[in-house]
Each structure stands twice: as C-alpha cells, then as structure tokens.
Length: 318
Image (tube, rainbow, N blue to C red; front, side):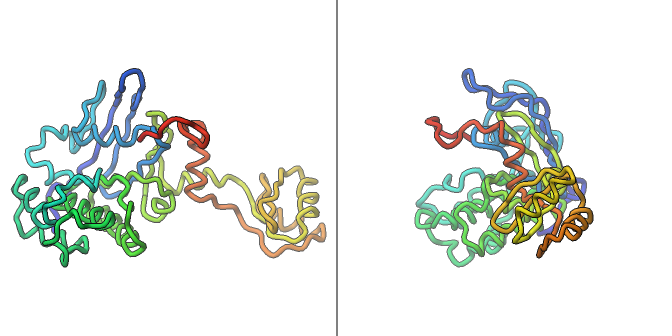
C-alpha cells in the first residue's frame, strides 16, 4: 500500500472520560485510553464490558453521554471523507446480498472519492479477486469477512478498527489476518482489534486494552501483562511429586500439583529449586520458570469483571 502523509505523521485514537448509559445500565464508565500509530492494540473484555459501545462511539454511530472519542484530534462525524482516514469492520453481514462484491466496493469508493482502481487492489489483497463479480448473498461467512476487511482498507486509511476479524475464517485466513495486522502496524497505522481469542492476540498484538463493566482494567503491553501473570512460579516435571512437594515445602515455598507429572512452586528461583531437589535426592526431568499464556493473564485480570458466566440466565452483551 502506498504510504500517505497522514500515516507518516501518525494518527492516534484518543478516548477521554467516555461515558454511556443505556437506561439505568452503564455501558462505558469514565473510559480513557490512546491507540497509538505503529502498533496493533488488542481491545478485550468479558461480554457486556463495553467494547462494541466504545467502538461505535469512536465511529460516530453512537453519541456519548460525556467525554470524547477523537481520531487524529477530530470527531469521526466531522471527517469529510472518513474512509480515507478510518477503515472499520464491525459487522461483515452489513452488505446488500444482491450486490456483487466489486459493486459494493465501487459504491463505497464513489462515496468517498476513492479511485476505482483501488477496488481491484483491495479485492486482490483480500483474496477475493476471482469472486468479485459474484453476489454477496452467496458468500460464506469467511468470504463476507474478507469483503468487510477489503472495504475497511479501501481508503488506504491511517486508522483501522476490526471487531472479531478472524470470525468465520479458516486456518489460511487466520494466518493471513495475522500477517495483515502486522503489516498495517508496520506501515505506521493505528490498529485497534477487538477479539475473544487471546491466542490470536498473543501472536499479533503489541499492546492490550482490557475493560470490564465499562471501566479500564489494564493499559499495558502484551509482554508486561504476561510477565505479571507469570509471577515467580517454577514448574518441575518429576515422577516423584510427593517427595518434590515435601522437599520444597521444607524450604518454606508454597507448592501445588499442576498435572500428573508437574509440580509448581512459588517464591524460589530456578537455581534454588534445582539445588533443593538434587540435595533431597528427588529426580526430575525438567525445571523451568512458569510462563503464563495471554489467556491465563486475561482470565486472572477479568475474574471479578465477568457479568455473564456459566449458569447465568442473562443474555450476554457486548
């Protein structure tokens, strides 16, 4: 994609003091954050946390009760040709089923004074060049998702917002999305991605915004969040679990059985664990510092912010 002056100077998303209520229920409660250019920022939280409401406010689809949501210092609704600044995928099904993929993109391009040649470029980028003349009504969910991404990139925007971009995609499509996100951020764009799949964000995101019940729980790098969740735990693989626990507990370290062959110990460095086990005559096949997954870190952080859990009768919100 050709680089634009807007991207070279950097266009952030800036949310400040955002509040939104639906009747008596707060959807977003004093939310503030910045999505920086040149990074893939994951936007995560339990169902009902306020992610979709926040993205809709950023895109001018909902009005906040208080606070601001700006793109490059301006409200989305004031952008003269918004697709040239912000590209978004919120609902891949929001396309007339009788219209071809190419005509859908041509209509969007015309509305924002985007050259028609760009339509073929994004169709090719999204892997839809061979089906551009087919009616969207015959598309699979994954193909609709690709079309939505093509539409988001039509104006070569400085800011990209994707809601669940891997939804409906096969393995090849998921790998394509990973590379696309990294490429967009590498171009200097601000990339905001909402997803329930922590494994995908662990592979593609630089930064995370975690919200719960409309409030910001964390604004941190993926690396720092995982490091915090990993703590000072050490995993020991051994067939002598009881003996290992007894030996390590004797040094004042809390221990727990993780699985049939693993004991986890807290508060001791790896070197000290190895020394204690060796001196105690406890055989082991591996000792390593525990590294939490992003999913583990996320679950620990949002445990008290889950509004809908198994057994609830309420309908999950977004």
